[in-house]
Image (cartoon, rainbow, N blue to C red; front, side, top):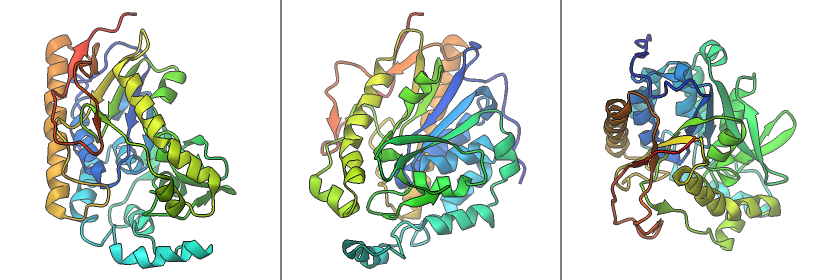
Amino acid sequence: MQNSDPSEEKRIFKSGKRTALVVQGGGLRGAYTVGVLRKLYEYGGPNQFDAIYAVSCGVFAATFFAAGQVEQMENIWRDRVHGSQLVDYWNLWSHLSQLWGKPVTKPVMKLEYLIDVFKGPSFLDLNKVFSAKPTITYVVTNYQTGNAHYADAKCPQIFDLMRASSAMPGAYPQPVEVNGVFYTDGGNSDPIPVKQAIKDGFKDILVILTRHHGFRKSHPSQLLAKICYPHNRKAQEAFLRSDACYNEALDTIENPLSGVNIIAARPHKPLTIHRLSRDRKTIIDTIEHGKEDASILFESLLTKNGCAERVAACSRNNRPIRSSNVGFAPILFRSRVVPE
């Protein structure tokens, strides 16, 4: 399936600085990311970026985007993840085995099924992935230390790294072995790897978020950490730090360092979809939501400056919204110039 070439004239970044795309996870909220990336392909595509950083379930759409296979990417989310195809709640019974130290043979989130889709019916062209201009980095969490590891996805173990990065706590409880090391969900250690992109020297950064303006992540409970990782203290500790890492990344996005331009593409209102949603209409509506928000953002950037030289930052006048308070939909984007 051939996708049309992205327009070079509508590139988001034209400053000549090193550019990076950062893609957040969020389980089935990633349908929003699919919509944003589908529209981003029309605004310069992957070749305007020097690097792509993806974490958790964001690795799937980010990789298809890098390969230029955006139509296949969208079709997967429209047709192959609803119902019990990807998320099967009956498999919760299998999760009880981990309480006795036994492996979970049937996880709620069936990542093996999704990888099989990528290898077969909705073929992910690895030649295109490996030859793509941007580097592709997946965030995974070392299961033994709880630390973030930034893995080069252009390698033979790419599918194992996908599973590792997206091994969502509670939904895919088994760590994934890659080259003799066990990893789990990258969202535990670096849920929005924007600080890593800055550390690596990138100055123009587009971040795709799946939470609305003003959202802040609440601290997870000790009980939930023990349920998700009953026999691994380091994994529990990483899980319990995830909210602080998440909120620090949002602070970086809203108050970037001097000389760093950050654009945040995110929902203009709270999404109705959740991490383990199975309703096909909700998934498709979320894809369209992403397309609509992205069109408004990218067009406004091009109209205002001809390129993205401003930062989409949150208004400091709005009280941060905790995950228990999502009934408020503030203005999506506020812009300010970041001095060099």
